[in-house]
Length: 440
Image (cartoon, rainbow, N blue to C red; front, side, top):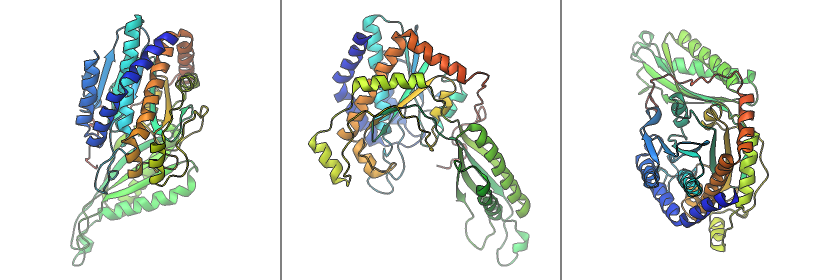
């Protein structure tokens, strides 16, 4: 096994200059969710050059892809992302990779290629599937891909994310619903004859008041957030249309289902009280991440094998110039088992196949997420060194799963025990396209 891992590591080392170039191109594209056409095409071109078969447009997502190499043996999936964020560029109105997905997608592609090279050279049976997953920032990509069967037939799945430190994750994350409530009323002159109108905005405000009263009676770990996207046109016209966008989060999918039911009741109350009508659209539904400790330990072993990357004085000085006094992180931390409060649609994948994830250091400790200060570090060596560590960790972990039947068997046994009698509900309706209401 050490020999086959060495082949993969040497390939990644030999291609790190090209990987940096690709990552910087995607950094410059800075394409937001569902608009990652150049980014996905660039990654697909590289995979095809190395003999991967590519299927495009999965889950009604034109920028999603599935790239496959090999036709027998254990099948390992790799989840890659490449969407940027609004308001994370060098100006307020510019897009930028404030979450490091330029590094994320690139590392996954080169890890997948290195695995194929190692399997091919040693004539080892195995199959690697690299998933191009768009629109993670809006929590849609993997949800719609999972709905349409993209993650079927996998023995295990690996993924990672840029962070301030290096460690594997064995904890869970919050489940979530993202939904829009549209209210329809009747317009009238707000001064001359308001009695002839029925305000759609009143419906939303009554709904929101009900939800805010509800907060006292929900578990402390739950989170409910909303923004009013349309509240009318001008004050002297009673609004005939309005809409509000809600996120409902909680540690378990079952709790989110119950909280969302109560939010719908508040919407119904708002419609009744304002004599308006409402319609709900579920944009995306996310499961909590199902931990797999056997897989997390496998990743942790290989992260420790790869080792933490080192930063030079120029990189350290750059971080200080940005205002960060804590040193750039170079060590490997122990396996982390904490529950994290944000949501991620990799949780949906974790209920369909054993999933393992980890972090590598790509920015200075204290860097705010989704911010230009983070974007800068992801576009230069500070982030790129973490990207290389991630690619090597994915490759060595995948090869251990392929070459060591005992490890893979332990991973799958745990998964089967935890998903016994579980039936996956895609949550979003079949045939519904991502972003059906165009509320970007």
